Each structure stands twice: as C-alpha cells, then as structure tokens.
Image (tube, rainbow over all chains, first blue to last red; front, side, top):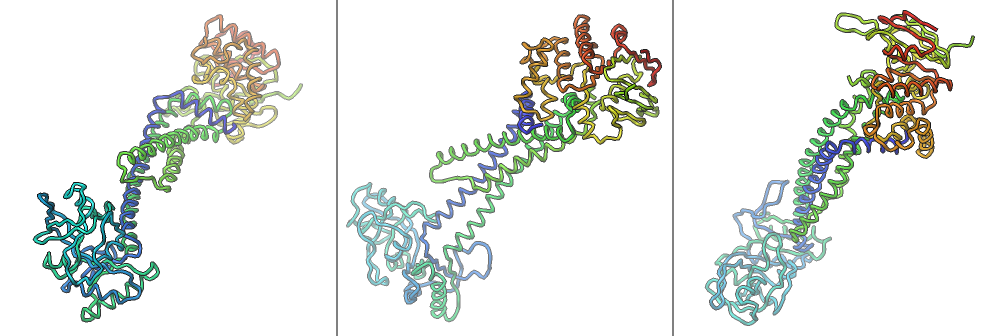
Length: 401
Length: 227
C-alpha cells in the first residue's frame, strides 16, 4: 500500500466520524495552545525583567552597605551592616582609574509643593553622575551643578510626572518648589524614561546629595552606583571598590557589590525555570489529550472490527493494519497540534495587543517541543489501539465478535 | 490427470467451548481442480463455514495439509498467508462487508490499493470491473445508497478485481431476495465459466444443486461428495 493511499484511507476514516474527530482535535489543540500561551507568558516575563535591568546601563556596579555571606540565590537588595556607607566613601572611589563615574545615592520621600499643589514624592539625592550612569536625559534645563558634592545647594530636577502634576505642563525652570521644609529652585526636568527596575523614574525629584543629607538628616548612603570605564574593566573596578572601602573601613570588607550581569543572570535563571515549569504544566494537558486519543481509538477499533477483518481477508498484512491505525492517530494528533499552534500564536498576538508594555513571545524550544510532542503523542497513544487492531483474528473480526 | 488445484488432507480444526472440544473440521480431505464449481451444504454448525475460512486462510488449522497449486500453506507465516489471500483468493460474504464510508469504486479498488498499484491504473481497472457487472453509473454511490443485489455485485467486483483463481462465497445470497439471488448466482456461474474455481457455501438446496459437485458436511466430516 502506497503511503499516500494509507494517508487517504485514514483521512476518509476520520471524516466518517466527525464528532469523534472533532473531540480529539479539540483536546489536542487545547493542549498545544496551552503550551504556547503559558511558555509565551513565562518568556515574556523573562524578557521584561531583563529589559528592565538592561535599562540600567551596561557597565554598572551597585555598591550596597553590608555583606551577604551566603552564596547562591539572588543577592540581597538591602543589606544590614554596623557600618554605613558615607559620601566620603563614595568620593574616595573616584581614585580608581577603572572607575568612570560614581553616583552616591540617598533615597527618601518628602512632600513636594508648588503654589497650592502638593505631592508626596520619592526624593533622590545624588550627583550629576547619576544621570549618565542611569542613562537619564533632561527634557529641559540643566543638570545638577558639577561643584563640590559636599556642598548643599538648593536646586532640584523634576521627574516628568512630578512636573506635569505640579506645574500642569507650564514652564517650571527657575521656579521655586518646597521639598520637606526647604525651598529648592527647579533647574531641569527629566525626560520620561518610564519604569526602571521597578522604580518610576519620572515620579521622582533629584536633588544634590548633600542637600538630601540635610533634608533627611541622614549621613549614610542608600547605595552607590558606579560605572566602570568599560565592560572589560568591571572586574578591576570591583577589586578597586573592595580595596578602597576596606582601607576606609578598618580593613573590614563590609559591602556588597552587585554587577548588573550577575543580577540579570540570576533573574534569567529564575524566570527560565518558571517558563519551563509553565510548559510542563501545559504538557500535562497534552498527556490528557493523548490518553483521550487512545480511548477514542480503542472504541474505534472495536467499532470497526468488521472492517479490519475485511482488510485482512483482502490480504492486508498485519503491519499494514497497524500502519493504517497509527496513521489515523498521528493524523489526528498533528492536525490538532497544527490548529493548537495557530490558536496559541493568535492568543499571544491578542495578548500583546491588549498589553502593549508586555511582549509575550513563544520561545522557539516551546514551538518545537509542542510539535514534536503532539506527533509523539499520536504515535505513542495510537500504537496500543493499532496493535490491538492488527492482532484481531480475521474470522472473529468479520463476524463482529 | 493433472495435479489438483487444491489438495486438503486430514484437515482438523477444533475449538474449545467450555469443557467440550468441538470438532469443526474432522479429518477433511478434498481434491479440488481448477475450474471446479462446488457447493458445500449442511446443517448449522456442520463446519462448512470453517472449511471455507480454512480454504481462504482466514483461519488456522490444527492438523493436516493444505496445498494450493502444489504449495503447502499450513506452515506459512502470517505475512505470506496475507499475500496468498491477496493474490489467489477472492471472498464474498453474506453481509457483503463493504466499507460504508467508501464509494462503490473505492470499495472495489481496495485490493488494488493494498498491493500499492498507482491510482491511475487502478481507476481504469475498477471502471472495467464495475461496467462488467452493470454498475458503471453507481461508481460514486455509497453502499447505503445501493440495493442488496447491487452491494453484492460490488463485493463480487472487489473479489475478482485481482483476478484471483479461487472465489470463495459464504452464503452469497443469504441476505438477498429471490430476484437478486438469481442474478448473483448467474454472475458467479459466468465467472466460473471463464475458468475461476468457485466454492459456494449455502443453506439453499436450490442453489446448492446447481453446482457440478456437491459436498455435504455433518459434524465436521464430509458425508457426501457428488460429482
């Protein structure tokens, strides 16, 4: 029997039982669509988080006070330490030739008021280096003064949202706002950058680090952002930071340095595992579909005993009967898989249109796996009924026994 | 005298039914010559259908020898038995056994499909076979759209499309009215006249008596063999 004849015969058999065929197709296509949708969500989450980190800039090191002694797992974002990082610690880092910029950061929240409007806003105290290190751009005005960072000046940069809310799109440059108890002059407005590492950079006011120290009455830094001269000098910069800080901290190594790479790597691992787990859950639905195929094919074999007996009487070898029923199961699985593939991809497309910020996309391995698994499901779960059909005794089969 | 087309020697077939062993075929020996027209008659359970199934290689035998064209068949593996069925034997059943979802033409073509014949060659052969039985305008009909007589004629076309030398008919008129029965018998006898060896199992003595050779079976034994 020629392969195309086998295919045609199986196709006609499937057409003859539309209800049964539709049922299996549905089960199969739900399974495949679930794999594609769920892995797309996982992959989308992974790309989203990595995109967030990459928004930080590439030669970045983050210095946190406190030392995490544990290894493995995600690095702590907030450490605990007996010894604080100070502004002087940060300025000392500039001695290293591997380090390009140092941006000390003091973080706090304070009400910001202009005329009758007032808002509680995150206040970031830093130096002009912050803007280049975090790749922030000014929409208008100028950056923080590049003078001695120990001197407090009463100037500030407004995030885009803050500017819009307080000034209602009017010019803010040169105006005075009140932050906490002090007055600050607006010298620049940041261009909208959107989300970066979960903090909304546009809903923020940036003031000189010394001013923040006065405002919050806190001498210690929240963290220091350091950029290396180049990606190749990240290791050197890390060493230098440790060495300089240890000298200043009585020989104790009590800081944690996080390289952006390692952060990305950690999150990448976590979220990849999540994607695999989602794919695995979806694969269970394919397994269920496979068992359904097996059941329905078993019923088909017992319903079509007379046909199988006839095929044998006409001289169809055992292997041919086996092939016919296997082809039927594989055809079902593949067609269901193909429909599921389209359905899943369509769902991803819809999802991406509904949530533009989040770009879900099916990972290639999931697409390949979905196709391979459907095919194997057909073969595997079709083989038991097919073997049963092939083993039927022709005399008994012809009489419907 | 030439070698017989079929030689059966001491063929036995028994089934276990509960504690009892039923001898469906009890040392059956027959010589059948090419072009013979044989009817097999007997009461229910006499083993006549079992004999036909054994001749058609549908059923295994427990003992004895079955030679077809001088070739011993009882020891063949299933794969080669299938090939013999395909090439040497045509079957006609009481209930026609047409595949309901296939058209008359596709049903007739099935044996050719199994041999891997190309579709184009198949088509002309099937058309000729259907035309020969007056079914040319029924080629695209499903079995359910055909009368019993027409269905049996489609089945005859299917059984003869491979030009097998042996035609086995198990109660071919059992489900037909007298008019269709007469027509089916006429066709089978015409095929026999062209040289095909025809063996008909039947209850109907009128049909059985038409055969040139009449075999009577009782309890798995041949009790009469009239030439």
